[in-house]
Image (cartoon, rainbow, N blue to C red):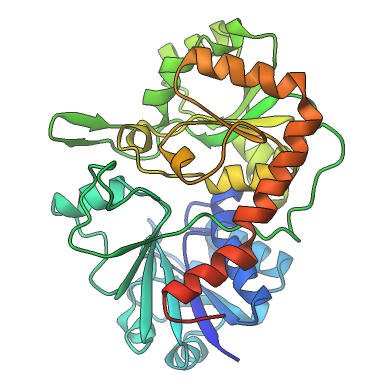
Amino acid sequence: MKRVVVSGMVAADPFQGGASWAVLQYVLGLERLGWEVLLVEEWEPPTGGPLARTRSAGYFIDIVRAFGLEDRAALLRTGSDEAVGLGYAALRARCRDAELLLNISGILTDPDLIEDIPVRAYVDLDPVFNQFWQESGIDMRFAAHNRFVTVGQSLGTPACPVPTLGLDWIPTLPPVVLQRWPVADGPGDGSFTSVGNWRGYGSVEHEGVQYGQRVHSMRNFMELPRRSDARFRLALAIHSGERSDLEAIAANGWELVDPVEAAGTPVRYQRFIQGSGAELGIAKSGYVLARSGWFSDRSACYLASGRPVLAQETGFSRFLPVGEGLLSFETVDDAVAGVESIRSDYGRHARRARQLAEELLDSDRVLSALLDRLGKAA
C-alpha cells in the first residue's frame, strides 16, 4: 500500500473545528483512494511541562479517536522526539517508506521525518500572505519541499500580483469528502452564517497596497443586515477589546455566536454548517485585493451539505461556475441581491449547491487530479 504523510494544524490552536476539518479532508480523502495516511502535527508549546498534559494534546487525541486514526497519527514537540499518539521511533520508521508528503503550511519541519520522502509538497492554504511574507524575508519553510500546491487558483497568472518566488505553483480546489458531508435535512434555520476569525494575523503591505484580514473586508459590509430581512449569524472569534467594531456589528443587526460553542470541534462545526440556511462568505481583504482565486474549504463544506454559498469575489468565479448554488458578490448591493436570490428559490439553489460539490470538489476527484500533477497517480 502506498504511504503518504499529511501534516497540518489540527490541534496546536485547539477548538477550531473548521481548521481541523481542512486537514482531515486530505487525510480521509486520501484513505478513500487507497493510501495509507500518517497524520503528523508538529508544535512547540508556549510553556514547559509534558506535551501529553496540554490542551492541544487532549484535543488531538479526541480527534484521532473520533476518526479512527489511533495507530497512524502523532502530535510532536518541535525539536524533540516527544510525541503523543504514535511513538517517534515508529513514526520515523514509517516516514522512511513514505512516497509523498503533503505538508500544509509547512507545519512539519523535522528533517529526520521528511528528508527521505521523495515527493515533498508544500500545500498553501493561505495564498497571498505566505508568498509576500517569504518575499519580505520571513522563512515560510518552502526550502524543504520540491513541489508547491496552492488554493490560490490565480497565482502565477497576470490577474494576480502575488510573487511566485520562482516556484511552479500547482493550483487545487479544496477537497471535501462527500461521504462524511451528506446533504443536510430540510432548509436549516434559514439564516446566513459563517465561521472565522476577525483578525487571524498581521496584514501585509506591498507596493503601497494593504492586504488585510477579514475585519478589513467586513467593515465594508456592515450595513447588510439592515438592507435585508434575512437573519445573519456569525460564529466569529473577535476580541472583546474591538469595541467600535462590536458596537457596529450589534447596531447593524448581526448576531454573534460563540465560535467555540458553535464550531469548536469537528462535530460542532459540521452541525453548525448543516443547521444553517446558507453561507455568507466574507473573505480576507488580501485574498480579494490580490484576485487570488482563493476559495474556502469552509464553503466547500456548505456546498456539500446542500447549503447555498454567497461568497465575496476573490477571482474564484473564473474557475467555478456562479449564479446558482454558488453566488459571488463585490458590493453591498450585490450581496443584498444574492441573499434575495437564494431566499426566493431556496430549493433550486440548495440542489445546485450539492451538485457543484459533487462535480468539482469531491475529494476523489480533487485529490486524484492533485496526485496526478504531483506524479503520484492514485
